[in-house]
Length: 494
Ligand SMILES: Cc1cc2nc3c(=O)[nH]c(=O)nc-3n(C[C@H](O)[C@H](O)[C@H](O)COP(=O)(O)OP(=O)(O)OC[C@H]3O[C@@H](n4cnc5c(N)ncnc54)[C@H](O)[C@@H]3O)c2cc1C
Image 1: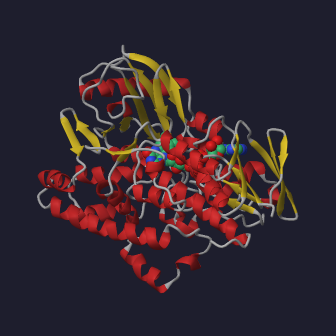
Image 2 (image 1 turned 180 degrees about the horizontal axis):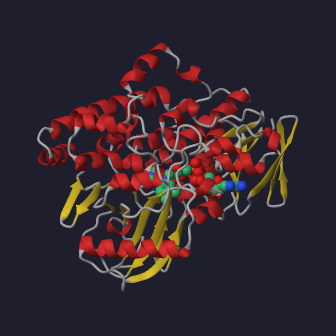
Image 3 (image 1 turned 180 degrees about the vertical axis):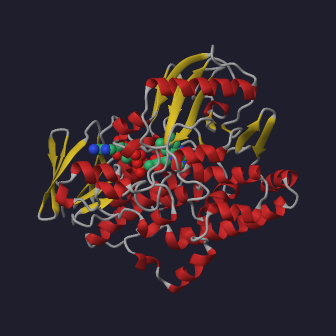
């Protein structure tokens, strides 16, 4: 019997996940990708002996990856090797004010206690609540497509909703447990970097702290791209076909159904289309006006997660003072958050994030050298000029020199910057966003743009602008959920 075709637009994590789930269910799957390689925002590049992951660097929630591979009777070990980082990461709160977060919980508890009497016990309580939220969210909420609020209207779910702290802010929740602003910052950073502020994010998202502190920070040897390679290997083994360098230019719709996908001058046909490219772009640029589910006004009213200014640097010596993950939180974090969300503009004194995977992995930089990835989260939609990038580059060099006593300005043998205009041209990212929509209360679960088009019967969406949200683990879940919607529609057992 001939297999039913599905076209997946985009080979990021959500598209790759969806493609494998559909291929295993018996569909004939073709992934059409605009760029020359898979991975989307998680692509990599190599220059002068340095290898850089271009996007994600934190491998959190390993259980979600295992759950995904288990769908195919596989484990992550079939594709890549994981290493638990210890310390998980390092904070700089000022010169000579360094805090390392160890992998062992009892040691973290001691650090908290030293900072504030009673904070060790408070952390225990905070994380017990976070664990409850994580487990309930994973078992009852996150693996739901969010098509309707009725998915969540079951008595046991409603009962847990209040315990999940959906309706109080992360900020208030932190203040209930900790007085020290520094401890609060240490727990706040996962949500800041993945699209929210403590004030606009529901306390539900303390589940991220459980994921971070209890489940650990891991590194896939070779870099995050080895996960992409694993996912492509899996998809290919299931028969998925990949077409690269081929941007989808338009979707032809007749009587509420996509009849043709036009990409790179070629015409493709399939009964089902799964768009994992940025939702806003697909809606606003590929579909005829009358088939758009959301208006440009709707998109402009969404709270986007940050864009990022990134520098990829090759350093011709070994660096002291930094770990695999290092956060410079020596400036006022709330002012930086304000410049992202409340008064969008380039931040005056930004917090900085450094990823230096050559600290753990000797394959990603030449001997005796380091690959340094520096990221500043910034508001989406800002004017992004060479002068602005250079201004921030100088700030980075100054801060690095001040905090670590190392002047690296003469040791940079490779430099590339990346910001809004690159996100737009590489991924068709709305306002140059890096991580999709922020996790605000009004943009959670069934309040996200829907996984199923309201106006085109055979069009489905996956990825970081729909449920469940930004991040690699959510992208895997999103792809799986969208694939299952197509299976259901096609009458294939889910
Ligand atoms: C700088 C940065 C740091 C991050 N850090 C982390 C982290 O540490 N940990 C974490 O878990 N997450 C992190 N994230 C978030 C995470 O990487 C993303 O949420 C996730 O990879 C998104 O996957 P996706 O499939 O939704 O989208 P994408 O990866 O963007 O994939 C969409 C694909 O669609 C393609 N496409 C677009 N338009 C078209 C078209 N017209 N035709 C064909 N193809 C098209 C794009 O080229 C792309 O390949 C980070 C993201 C960035 C950018």
